[in-house]
Length: 108
Image (cartoon, rainbow, N blue to C red):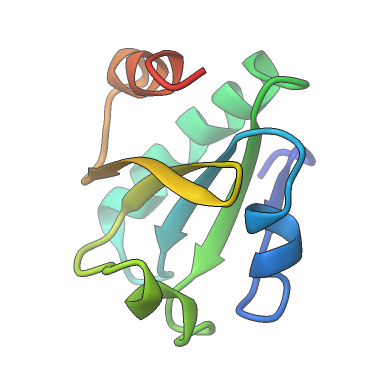
């Protein structure tokens, strides 16, 4: 995993995501989720390409059970872009890199 992607927790979500200076892409995932593992290398590439414009973080839903229900997470992977402490956009399911960059670009 890229050094640019940080793991967040229920405890750090407020500081790392809601109060972030940049827009934040949150990847809700779990170890047992095949599609989550498939998009991990794509997220690494995106973190590098959007460095300085977008923060990319991951939240393990099995280790952090308080945050996902607050944002209506029902399936994984779920990708959410937060801007100014609010959910700006959501995508559920594994995305191709072109789909993911189009999703991000629509919010930046």
